[in-house]
Each structure stands twice: as C-alpha cells, then as structure tokens.
Length: 114
Image (cartoon, rainbow, N blue to C red):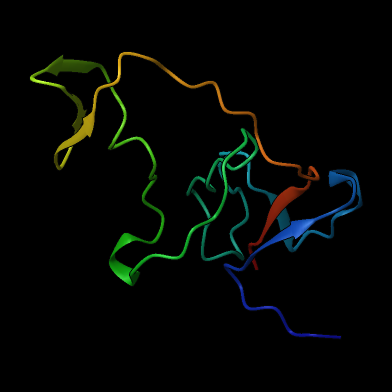
C-alpha cells in the first residue's frame, strides 16, 4: 500500500460512503476532526465541474479561472474581457462560441485529511 500524504487530492471512482475516516470529498465542507490539520477549515469545492491545475506554493488553495471572465466590451475591432489583474484584448468578430466539454468520466475529488 502507498502512503499518501495528508492534504493530497486524488480522483476517486467510487462512492463517498465507502471512504475511510481519513478521507473527505472535496465539496467545500468544513472538516470537523480534531486529529486533522484541516480541522475547522473548508476543503476546496471541486464537485462543480472544476479541475485541478498546478500552481506556485503561494497560490495553493486560491480559486482560479474566473479572473479572465466577465462582461465584454468592444471597440476598435477588439473585445475587452475585464479581469482582476488587468485586461485581455481579443479580436472582436461579433460572434460567440458554445463549446462542448471534451469527452470525460465523472469522478469524486477526495482529500486525505489525516
């Protein structure tokens, strides 16, 4: 058996009810376990079609993906997407896309809490 470090998040193809007391589903709930270093803290909410992405240590736990979305304004042939860290200019062709999700398999993201 592999020793998985506390705080690891893995994809789990199973039922939440089958998890041992060392694991919790990453659904944004608060950990209520005095033996866990995460006691009183919220686990990440990863059960709403989010995915994991590698970041620097300073950004661990910060949500991402929303800083480049928002209302678009256009002018001079470009669309501006308002972002929290500046603006991104894209060619404005006056149309939009509705892209389907790529083929996938649903799993639970679980975190080892102790």
